[in-house]
Image 1 (spheres, rainbow, N blue to C red):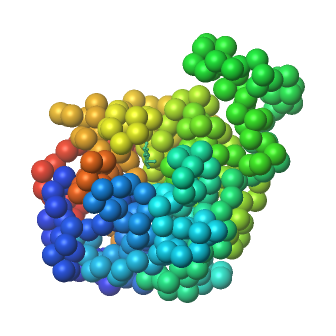
Image 2 (cartoon, rainbow, N blue to C red):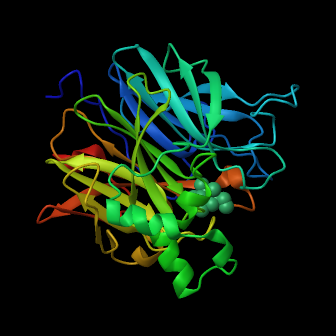
Image 3 (cartoon, rainbow, N blue to C red):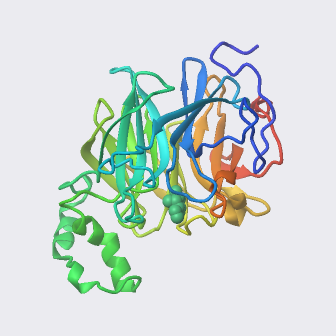
Length: 364
Ligand code: GAL
């Protein structure tokens, strides 16, 4: 018997295929994530147009009781069509939106990666919007580069002494061994200290104690940062750590199982798929240990053609997690496909293998 907090039924999930919504239209919610609230799943993602990856519409939301049948709830955070001074002017880049619910404020908080129109990917900002309802409308609040003026809280005095000697002027040439060493020691953290740290591909995670964290590709995508959000989830507290410095990770997806934090990420090859990586830690603050590719079997060296976006923990089921990824189609962005596969565990370690089709009964 399913309790009321469990999905009613689960249709078949077929990764890589067209996934029709309640109107028969392929779901348009890319780089997305899922919020479970009041017995309903809400899937937020990037609306992708047919001929550009820029934001022409905004952030979409779909709702479902069973994770396979999705109702289009429409645009919950639209682009701005007229005010050219708006950060969200049509043609900007709005990527990887995630929504979390704040128990204290009763607000739904969305963070996403924002690039300003006409500036490529140089702005590298995080943006936040808020709503009283999971289906919006979300009110855009601000965009910023996180943690201006703050150093990683766990930097030792010794590391700080080395950090203080780093001089960007000495490293005009990228990718040399010396440059990589300097990146590890915080060369770009120092470069961006005053204005805040770059933040592109991102994730949100709410821990069991209600604290929320923002995980993002920083330092020109060279290093992931995990940063604590304030109690209202609307700003950064300034407490953060760097994960795998100079490791070049994108598309972070974080989940927790039996007290261990797991982080799946991709390499940095734009829209092209690459081999996923995985890290684990006993605390969100680390120490983070690198593991091999969590994907196994045919095409696992290319994450089955996708790039991670989220790991969903299913409420009411034991050890049930779904790995979600995007199969990007940059020539026709709206045709991008979704990969949803169960996370399996061997000796406590997560792995993901391809299945042409599966349903929620897999977890029983
Ligand atoms: C990918 C990233 C996407 C998007 C894309 C742009 O690496 O994961 O979210 O930013 O690059 O080229």
